[in-house]
Image 1 (cartoon, rainbow, N blue to C red):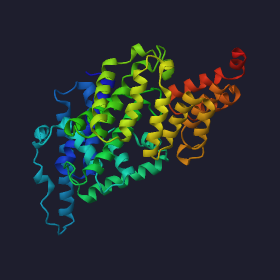
Image 2 (image 1 turned 180 degrees about the horizontal axis):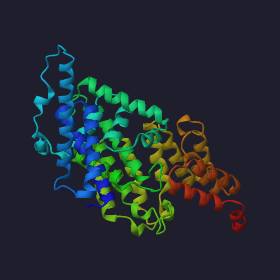
Image 3 (image 1 turned 120 degrees about the vertical axis):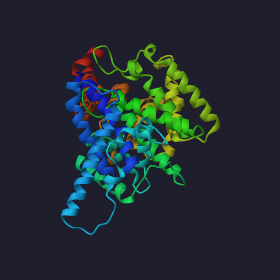
Image 4 (image 1 turned 180 degrees about the vertical axis):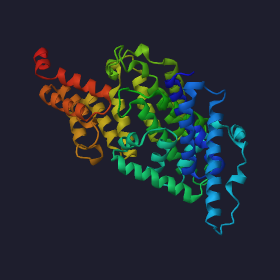
Length: 425
């Protein structure tokens, strides 16, 4: 008998590998996804009771493959009953019973790397970039449609339609697993953005009780490492990997013993993973010296400045503000401006930071996030406007979906309210 949570975690991690193997072998994204879901359901019912199989991924591939075979055989029988004129060779003959057990040895890669191939399939050029990201987050990252919708700042029904259209487009295009050729740069750019979004969702979950989803950050780092090994001369891949490792190195210090969120300025830096920081810093130094500067390298450089400071008071905020300014010129992302507002506020004073914040205050892309109110509250608190800070912390807390963030913002609001203001007197 196996622990239910252990089984659920194993199934979540295995699903992209199994889907990758089946789609590589057969195409037909939708059918393969349905078959994988049936296999996962069978495992969820059986494994806790009877124990884990010796090769869980192989078991899932076998069961899902048989589900596909059954589907194709049923479809063939239906066509025969309807006396259709289709003379195509039944797919069931191409996938003889028992063949599934050999899927783990498929070339050019094993099931462990099928997730990477699935990532490249989901960034197929027939898809728009938003659809590429959404489909990959669903198929590779295992995020729910609701989580993806929040990451994109769009309504859930809109995202559900987008994912469905992406699957249909993949099937219509007859997409197969191939490493990117002439469209490599576009495919890689989309893949890197997908990995970046997956990592961010893992670093701070958009909703729920947990602050982080370590499974997602670990998977994003694993896949980025794989890309870096395949293309060691690509500066942006190396930059993204360095960024992820630098940020993930702070994970253990982000929460207190009782589960409260600890902001960067208050973290015990002795709890940071300094071996990981050294690895990332070396990687970043090499890529900055040899590759054209890109957005991920700039973000990694910002994270490195934080990592190099002995404490918050020692942070070179002017350098961070300069790096954010460079990043802002290379991207059309209001979140970058929010971060620059914080850095400018630290380097030049909260009034200057508020002026930067005002430049994106009306950006419609920020309407569904609590971040603008949280940044404004922070800057107003630094300015000494405790009433204004209290109001914006309250607004941010109401809008926050992650319960750890909501709790932190509520505590900040309480600290800047009437009692907190008197106490500061």
